[in-house]
Amino acid sequence: MKRYASEFEMMLAPLGDGRWQIRHLGWRRPPPPVFSNRDFVQQLLDRVVRLLHTTNMWPSSQDEKGAQIWMNRQVIPPEHDERVIVSFRAAMLALPSATWPRLWDHIERRLTFDPYFIVLGFDQNIVKSVLPRLKAIFTPAWVKARYQRAGLSDMTGQLEPEDEGFFPAYHLARTAHGVLCRDPGWNYLVEIGLALDTLDGVNGLKRLAARLGAEPGTQHHLCLAAELHKRGLLVGLEPPTGSGSASCDVLAALDGHHFQIEVKEFSSRKPLKRLRKELADKAIKLPNRPTTPVVFHVVFRGTGAQDVQVEQEFFRTISEIVDEIPPQISAVIAGRRFVDSYGGFLKRDFETILTNDRAIVPASESHLREIFRRNYEEAHLPYYDVGTLFVVGQKPSER
Picture 1 (cartoon, rainbow, N blue to C red):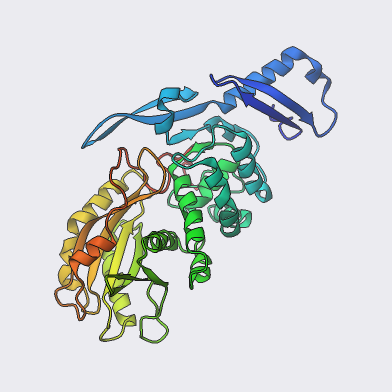
Picture 2: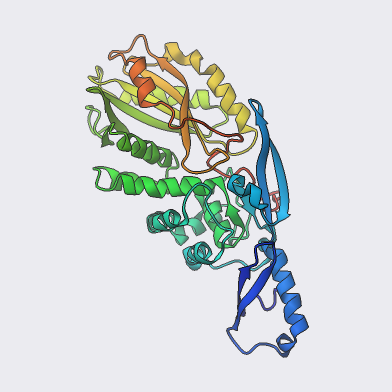
């Protein structure tokens, strides 16, 4: 089949039980005589259908320690459809790669014709509505460049979570190639697109949006700003700090009190060391005596299952730096963001608020708790990082 894969187009319709029906079989040139044989065409359909079987994962029973995960292959059980957030077709990697210029064409066609490609918790019309925003930032050339920097030539290559731009280059390429059907990374992509809509017209958005592909931390920056904007707390994006040309990430206000917020995202194996450096660097750029509380909001981005322990250790030990916070900085907030097993928008909360007793401008902890309060009433295990829980494909022995 590989020999003819690029020569024909087959349109199938699902029958709802894992079986598919041919709706159209078109050729780019006259087909070989063997394709006039009904038995051969049926064999071809059977082979294609095996490629379309999905591997699906959903939680079952859960308690405060976590949730059991069930898995099946072929078709999602109807009774679990609303809990399956991870679904993929690994067999599709056996097909020749789609071409880079058509990356978004393939994604759009899947949204239109592939009923198995959904973003759990979002209506398909909402997903379609954000594509123009995402296409303008994460262009085919941008995705291709991330693969090439990792030594990969096409969409079937195995981009690793540690590679630059893994999110969302991996998610877009695997989706265009027909592999990913449901993935928590797409929840983050949709939220990024909706955040761009929410902040449309806000001064500073163009500068921030221009950095979304180059600086992963700006993606969290954007989504946090959009959430504050919807709550009526956002005053400005990247306003000046009052010291030369330096700026802060977000200016927010609550009950007439203003707060300069620095948004940081760490993926380092030593996040506490990285935080110390970021605090010291920011203090140099701030006025000697700020007139507004400056607070750091820090989240952790994992690149693998082992990072759960790294994040937990970070939360456990962050209080060690409380006496090292420079006096120009009023507080440090260590937060989480994740997709729960019902999908939808990312959920955000905080684990720790460290207020600086030596701050030139103290920050009220009650105000900070309100600004960074959790944006959900209930969360359902398991929780997923904004990247992918499972990397679909074979891990290369060495690159």
